[in-house]
Length: 126
Image: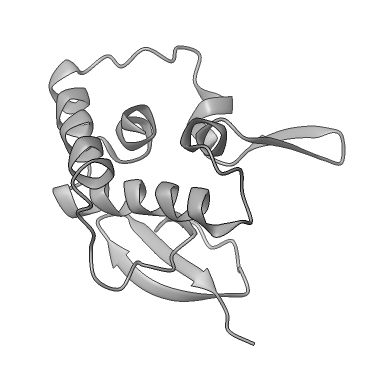
C-alpha cells in the first residue's frame, strides 16, 4: 500500500495520498478486484496481447525502489493511517478508479472528486 501511494501520489498533498490509499482499499473490498491489497496493487491484465497494470507505475518503472526517502516515509505514514486507523476522506467511499488530470480516458464512470492532480470516480449507478 505504501509503495502504491508513493509511486502514484508521492508528490501529491496529504489528501491525494489518502485518496489513492482509499481507492486501493476500496478495490480490495469491492469484490470486483482481488481481495488482497498486494494483489490489487500488482494486478496485471492482458488486453490485445499487451500487459496492462492496474497501477501504471508497476509496469512502467525500471526501478521499484523509492528514491525519495522523505516522500516514501510520508506515504508509509498515510498507509498506516488509512489501513490501521481507518482514516477516510468523505465522498470517496465508493471510488474505485482515478487518473491524472492531464489525461481524459473518457470513462463511463461518475466523477466523485478531484484532489491534487488526480480525478476520482465510482461506477455509475444503474
